[in-house]
Amino acid sequence: MAKTAAFIFCVMNIESLRQYCLSLPHTKEDVKWGADLCFTIASKMYCVAGIESPMKVSFKCSDQDFDLLIERPGIVPAPYMARNKWAMVEKASSLTITEWEHYIKQSYFLIISKLPKKTIKELSMP
Image (cartoon, rainbow, N blue to C red):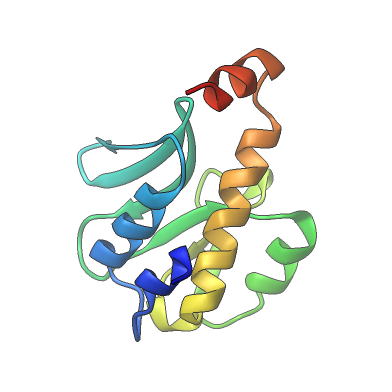
């Protein structure tokens, strides 16, 4: 069974988001600013979800994906982070589960690509 097959849900919710993010290697979670669940790799955020309902989730995007995503209903530039190409999903059904997984994983790898080579090497070690 493929690893992502365990994450098949009808609509993304906070628990399925947690399960997916924590399945990515070396991910840590932390609550910041009192009500935001942050998922990090080497202390760098790649996904932030508001704990309060309705769930709002922000993640880093490629330049092209950012422009396409913010044209969709229910997705806006993330406050304070739009200049860094972070999008905020305000309505979970704006993305399919496959898209959620794609964009979260893409954010994860975009953040890893900016880490120092030494940190990347340390993460690769058992």
